Every structure is written in structure tokens, then in C-alpha cells.
Length: 444
Ligand code: SF4
Ligand code: SF4
Image 1 (tube, protein in one colour):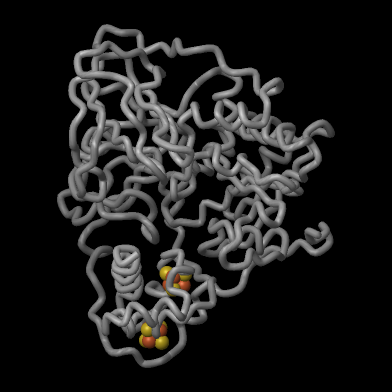
Image 2 (cartoon, rainbow, N blue to C red):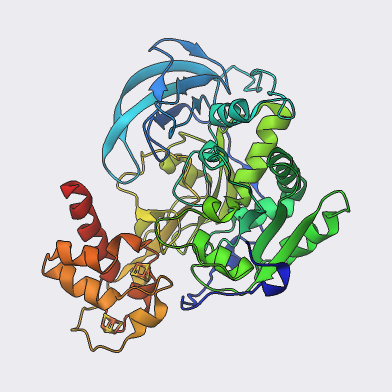
């Protein structure tokens, strides 16, 4: 039995309060980035099995045309972001630096770039399996983080009844404001997506939009658009990192713990990021597959911070150029937020489905703190929202005692970075944990 509404809480234990830095872009209306000459679309830009190409070099493709099919159930389709020609299918740099197989498309400079794909499937009449397949065809992934194909959560085990549909609008990472702008500028699309999903779940699930209180305009706009035929609640939440982590959001909204090894659906809950839900509405209402990504371009190294709609596959270099370029003292460019994002190895790498942000930092922000021995202050334990023992994990990782780390639940670590942020000794706890997790996965 799920907790009744009277037990709703507004927070979770532990966590941190990093400086937000959202003011740079929070009030900026989203602009559409112009089309460029060349696009690179990795086949593995989602969690799971890479997509399989459906096109060949030299082939003409239309904007919105499916160019790769799902490689397995946990996989999704890929669509062309422009009308043009397939140039190559080969290995290209991924944002993290590794090479991965990708479809390269050259845009047709004379094409109108109008979307003229297939009409959308009628979501009301689809069988449950066909609805999941239709969602898989859209190419939409979870846009809040790991890029899990969106259909996976809607393939429910027999007997599972969903009581809560949660729209995650926390966007707790510093600097990022693209979900915020979606809630402000596309509130109707978000509410329409909730209506579609709630209807498909049987029409009885309670819909809740969880938003941190630092987005008062989004909270006000969404509240204004609620009507009796839109049974949705907007719940303001404390500003705290990592509020957007799904387990923390569930804890804050419902007061429930999702036990290790279980999924939210096992407790009757489905959660999607707000941008994911708006994209689902676009797909079922207009047939618009997932070909454009909302990206926050920000940080002290960016000349003109912006929120942009960027076609997938656009080189990061072009996005930065559109925003006025990088300042001379830029030292590092990240993809994603500063807490969980990854350094971009090459500016020729493309925007992918999970590229929530491009952030540029100067020498002042990227200087690594000098590392001192652990003083056993316990601040990392107080910061960890998963109640792990980060200092012990770091000690064991340094000694390469990876087997022992399994016994103290290293795999439960979501790599939120709160422990590293809190550590006064400058110990790179998160990097040590990541290395250990990689080693353990390799052993497996
Ligand atoms: S141990 Fe993992 S989950 Fe805990 S604070 Fe550190 S990074 Fe976050
Ligand atoms: S916060 Fe840093 S110094 Fe303090 S106990 Fe944790 S690892 Fe040690």
C-alpha cells in the first residue's frame, strides 16, 4: 500500500547545497540553433544495446526519418535531425573521448528542413504492447540523466498497478536550466504528456510534478494551467542536491524508500523527467521523433550563456561558436552538470540525447584542490544521500580492495559527487569510486 497524501514530505536526508549559478540562463527564453553542415549520430547514445543502421552511405534522408532501429528491447530508434545525405557509417569520437559507431549526415543546404515524417500513432487505440513499441519508435530517452529508453518503464510486469505518475522537474544540478525553461515555455506540452501517460496507465494514477522552489515562475505557470480535467498536483520542494535523483524525489514526495534492488514500478510509481514527458506529447500529437535536444550552454567560460534547441549530432564546437565562443582562460568544457557531467575530450564530439548542458570553466573553477589525508570528520557520510561510507570506499579503492567494496554496497553509489563536494581534505572520492566500479564491472 502506497503512502497516502497526508504523509507527503518535502525532503530527503543528507545531501548538499552547492551554489546554484542558474541565474546566468534561468530567465533566458530558449532559442533554436541554426542548422549546420554536418551531423554525427552515435548509435549508442542511449542506455542498453546500440541501434542498428537502416541506411547506407550516399542515401538521401529526410528530417525525422528513422535511420537506425532498436538493437534489442533496451534500445531505441534514431532519426535524422536534418534532410541531407548519409556520408559515412564509421567510428567517430563520443563526447567522453572513446570512439563509437555513428552515422554521419551532411545537411542539404537547399532543403526546407520541414518535418514530414509518418503521421503519429493513435495512442488511445494502441494495445499495451503496441504503445510500448510506438514509444520505442520515437527515439525518446530519459532526458534527466542516464538516457534509459523511455518505453522501458512502460513495459510493466503482469500485476503491477501504477498509483503515482511523477514528473521530475527538480533539475538540481547547478547551472542547468533547460528543464526549467521547458516547464515555463512548454507547460501545456508537459501537462498534455501527463494526460497521455496517465490515461495509458488506466486513468487512476495520481500525477505529481515535483519542482524545486528555486523555479517559482514554473510553479506558478503550471498551477495556472491546472483544471478539474487535469488531475495533477504541483509540489514545490526544498532546494537540495541531489533532489532530482529518482529515489530522493520519491522520498521527498511520498516519504517512501525504494529498497536496493527494486525499481520504483515495484512500488507502483513511474517517474519521468519533465522534458521526457513533453517530448512524448510531441511524438503522439505531431509525430515529432526525438531529433532536437534542449541544451543549457553556460559557465564562466561562455561568452553568451543560452538555452538552445540543438539538433542531435551538432558538433559541440558549433554550439559554442553560436554562443560567442569560449573565453581565452577556459580550461575545461563539460557535458552535463558540474556534479555528474563528464569532461568533453574533443569539441568535435556531437550533442547526444543525454547532453543536458555544455558548461565551460576557467582556471579559477577547475583548479583541483590539494589532497590531504582523511581527518575522519564524517562530512562525506553526512552528505551521502544513500547512507554509504564514502571515506571507507575511498580508502579501499586506493588499496584496490575492490572485492571488499562490494560488501559495503559500492554498486548502490549513484556517483552524485556529494561526498567529494563536502570533503575538506580534497580527496577525489568520486573518481576513486568510479575507477573501482569500472574494475568491478570488468571482472563481471
Ligand atoms: S558515495 Fe556515491 S552516492 Fe554517496 S555521496 Fe558519494 S557519490 Fe554520492
Ligand atoms: S569528508 Fe573527507 S576528510 Fe572527512 S571523513 Fe570523509 S573522506 Fe575523510
